[in-house]
Image (cartoon, rainbow, N blue to C red; front, side, top):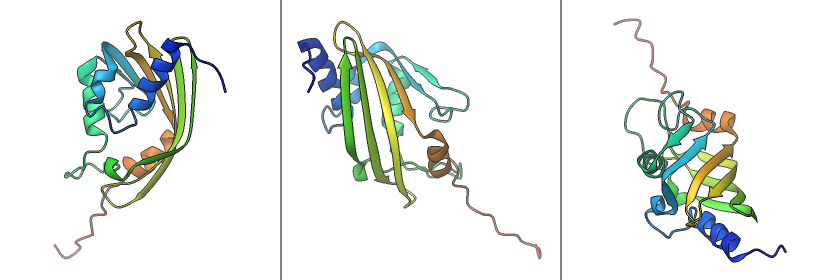
Length: 157
């Protein structure tokens, strides 16, 4: 087991807090000018992968588990059903890497499992300054962003 400095342990604890019940407002873990990078350009609008500033991060945090009521084809996982396993966390200075397997049900009733790897960079105050989120984006796209209802043909209409 590695021995970590007090700052590295603080950073590990903060990284783990992003996935724990507390704090309720996860945005408090981030610096005001933080950036969250996500390789799937559908999280906050087509084409956007780098989400800059605390307001953009709050949108990610509050929108991740929100049920969709439109016909956008987007489903989301129900965060109340989520659980992480196979968690691995490593730290080196201002960086923390956390990998885990996430399981949940989507609001549309689908089973969802994906492997995530987050690379955190912390500022001197112990807040997340830059977060890189890696996941199987092909699988996530197929489960979460490709759920269009089939419109029946109406040949007699």
